[in-house]
Amino acid sequence: MASTLTASRRCALVSSRRIFTLHGAHVAKELGGAGFRVTRILIPDGEGSKTLTHVARLYDHLARARMERQDPVFVLGGGTLGDAAGFAASTYLRGMPLVHIPTTLLAQVDSAIGGKTGVNLGRGKNLVGTIWQPAAVVCDTRMLETLSRRQLASGLAEVVKYACMARPALLRTVSRQLNAMLSAKPDVDAALVTACVRIKADVVSRDEREGDLRRILNFGHTFGHAVEKLSNYQLLHGEAVALGMLVALELSITAKRLNSEWVHSVYDCLRSIFPRLIFPEGRMSDLKRAMAHDKKVQSGKNAWIVLRRPGEPMAYEPESAEVRAAISRARANWKSTGK
Ligand SMILES: NC(=O)c1ccc[n+]([C@@H]2O[C@H](COP(=O)([O-])OP(=O)(O)OC[C@H]3O[C@@H](n4cnc5c(N)ncnc54)[C@H](O)[C@@H]3O)[C@@H](O)[C@H]2O)c1
Ligand SMILES: [Zn+2]
Image (tube, rainbow, N blue to C red):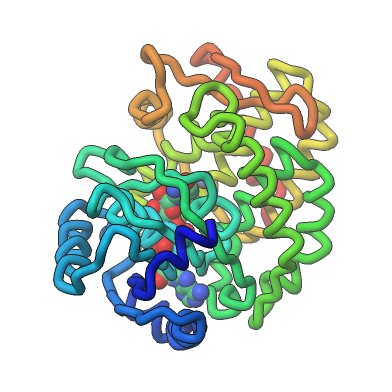
């Protein structure tokens, strides 16, 4: 890995104006100190900029800077920038070395790990992409100090996901550290990020191209993606996944006899992360249609990930009546935990 990165004396540092203003100078200085001549490239971030048009602009920047195939691309940003710039790095000159420096909690624990890159098309999210493993991922939790409470909470939903599907003990860690993490000067424990990275890296290294195993990372995402889309992306990804996990947990209770007391402790943890999150009233037929369009649907069926025990995920294909009932219970139970 080291030789991939040090084969060149030049590198591109891709970021957005906002993130570069907050953290770019420090990163550029470190890269300069390591002997790199740094070409700074600023592009927009956010879901709306994960498009082929923006990727084409990034290719143009790379071409104007006369980047060569061995020159590494460092991407400093959240998941949207990581996905789009990672896609450009994986395709420009048939692929350049890529280093992620994720700046959101979601990107540190999830999107920067595993090698998926991609952009959206008008017809759906992440429809075009590659699997391109980064040469390195550098997570510095101090960069999270400038993140909004809402973005931090959204990233924490993925941490709760890892707790549910792999390490239930993480739930207690999250609850214990929650006040510090969601304070005005957020303090996120690097050990918590490391624990999540290990879980994802372990799953992906055993199943890079999404056979059956990698799908367990989609716990909470079948319903989550549907409500995220139906909200026109007004719900952040993690907020939608939190609601999705509630539905998957309700299904797990009825279909797999998952311990309901433990499920209540997950409700409590999510409620303390999202004190004001409202379960949308969306029509069941719209939800069904949105779930049917999920990218992960195979032969027209949604394989849900449910838990047979805390930390033990499995695929399950419920009947639509079961899904309907689970959504109603999740909505009612979530309401009852609110103030
Ligand atoms: N590739 C994968 O495996 C994978 C996995 C999960 C999610 N994703 C993708 O990740 C994307 C979501 O990523 P995200 O949640 O990081 O969103 P994001 O990249 O849009 O970042 C959220 C907001 O935070 C701002 N920001 C970023 N870092 C900051 C910092 N340190 N301080 C202050 N503000 C900062 C950004 O400017 C942006 O406005 C989605 O497009 C999703 O599809 C990809
Ligand atoms: Zn997710």
